[in-house]
Length: 374
Image (cartoon, rainbow, N blue to C red):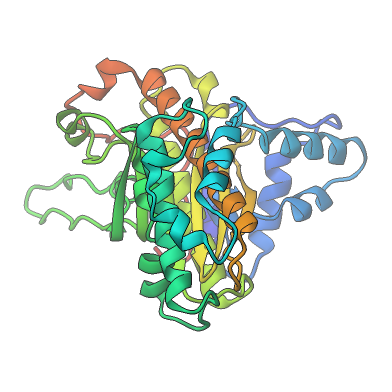
């Protein structure tokens, strides 16, 4: 594994991350990666522990690394998302319990909140709230414990796909789905053999995740790029456990980090202006029972990326109107940020690139991820 990692480390062509002392930050990160004795996202050039990354440096170098990691946490949040109208609409939908059910039966048309919201957005928020209320109502307003993974995905979080894709900027694929970006990375060097007498090597499938969110573009153009649903922006994993330190949650986090990096590389392979590389962000949404953890992956100078924790959302065990409103409002903020990024991606890639017929066979700007188990 160390040899494979070193090969990809040495294959990097680009500007190094030079610190105030003159040290190359990538070399420090690389030494730490080689010292690891178990599978880690560091082998895929993804820093998943910001505090650990800071402790690898001293003095001015530590300050420089901390400043860079802090600035990376704000990448992609370039637009101020005003969700006051959404919050006001949701509060008007929810009359004080126990008259909430009667209030919801009036429908979204009869909510006289600020008309600055589109009818489609009002309807999406209302349907999400209605679905959440029905789950609580069925269980006497106390969420059950230890349900199956499918119950959490389809019942509790089942409103999420419709809420995210409203507006036509994003597309969603549900169930067990293979990432096209991951597939492209795994098959990048698996072309036809030099000798025609040898059989062509079998193509490998990419990592499978429980959901994908992509830029919504025309089908004809995306098929030519090998991505039937457009450039992938976010991956989702779901589980029934609510303990974020469990084995499944930790393994899901590693998978999401690798897929998010593959998405980042797949997009940047079509962007002509390399300066946009540090403006691009891809996302990961991890569902663990009642809890959803939001991540964002951005590029650091040099070889490495960083996985930033954006927030943790949680359904209350007992019905709480204000907490549920805050949860929905935060999801709207996440939706707006991903829509903004999808718009940027389409602008950076351009219409000419979307119409290209050639497959993605050239080398990506950074070496591929090298997990212990693909």
